[in-house]
Image 1 (cartoon, rainbow, N blue to C red):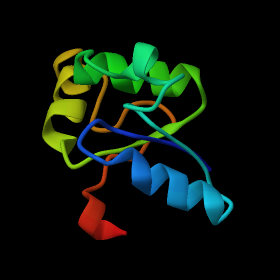
Image 2 (tube, rainbow, N blue to C red):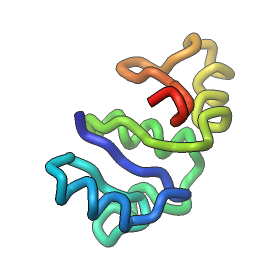
Image 3 (cartoon, helix red, strand yellow):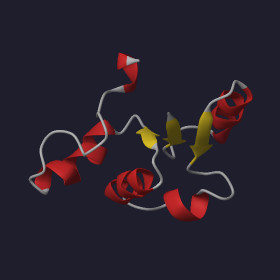
Amino acid sequence: MKLVLNEMWSSKIAVELRRRGFDVMSATETGAASRYSGVPDDVVLLRAQEDGRAVVTDNIADIGDPHRRAGAGADPPGNRLRPATAF
């Protein structure tokens, strides 16, 4: 599974996860920041879907709300919105 860590997560976490074999990037890292940093949460989710990545976030309410307002259901296509504590 390919992941992108939302802005609240330190890029140090991404570095350590990559060291352990995970395909992960941090929204604040060079190379990802221009695509994921400083943009609204719904844009982060859309871009992650385009990139084939799941978003790791503590901001599940804001990530899910734009999708629900669009009338598309509880979970964006290809994603399961779950709090980090569920893992």
